[in-house]
Amino acid sequence: MIQQFSVGISDARIAVAAVLNGARPNEAPLAIAVVDGSAQMVYLLRQDGASAIDVRTAERKAYTAAYIGRDTSMWRLQIMHDGRTVADWANPNLTTIHGGWTLRRGGQVIGGIGVSGSGNEDRDEQLALKGAEAAAQLAVDEWRQQRDPRRIRDRSAVRA
Image (cartoon, rainbow, N blue to C red; front, side):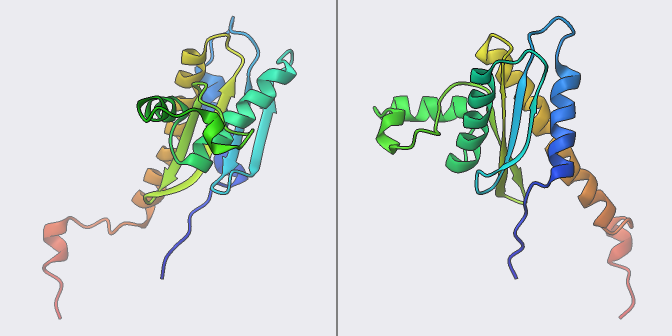
């Protein structure tokens, strides 16, 4: 049976909290969006003072990361290498602006996170990575809870 993973509201809140914890106190207000594997919104946070354009850009970054299955900066490099543009996809929700990270679990794309508002797309990308790392850590913690705690050598000594 194939198990389908997804990003839920609790995972999304943890990822957003990691972004906020990574932000500097004097940084501009951020907009942070988390979408599921179908690129549908799961959680959106707009700090006081974040502009509407930052909200829309964060949404588009998260959408692109989930929909394309690549971080927005990597997708930009790929389409530039291929001699293409975002317009080739005829999808107005796609963007190549840095700051969108793909969320994965068990080799599957489970969503995307987008950050906008720092005033620097490379900084947006660094902050989005903090959220993606927090989401990945959740999968590691879950695996640790489910695995057999015995050492591999001890497992082979099981009596039949």
